[in-house]
Amino acid sequence: MTRHVDLTTIDHETVRLVEPEWCTGHADHTPCHRVDLAHTGAERRLAYGSDDLLIAMLTQDPYAKDPERRRTGLYVEQTGWAATLDPDGVRRLAATLTVHAMHLRQLADRLARLGDEEAGR
Image 1 (tube, rainbow, N blue to C red):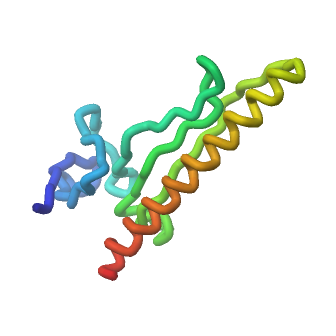
Image 2 (tube, rainbow, N blue to C red):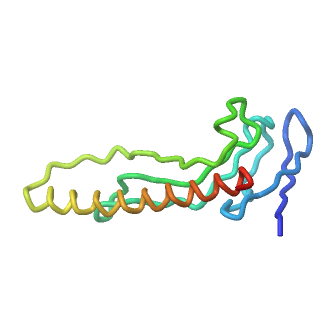
């Protein structure tokens, strides 16, 4: 079943969008320009201990001027984390980054499947 959401814009009044299944919703929506409408998925925090290293989430900007941004992508943000580590800490960080690389590959696979679905394949 296709979900739709109606969002108010400054320049096109109310716009009806198809809402992807991964979108977390638009409860915090404030009126903006249609080109700025976006779908975002749940944040995936990739941490080292209690500190975030990366944040990743699915995103789509259905009315973006750049056609590439209209397709679903994975937004990845690096945090400003920094630390001086001893040899064991470096090994733990390396192990953590290896696990995070696996999670990013899984997200890339999901993104590829979503791209195939969007293309009708």
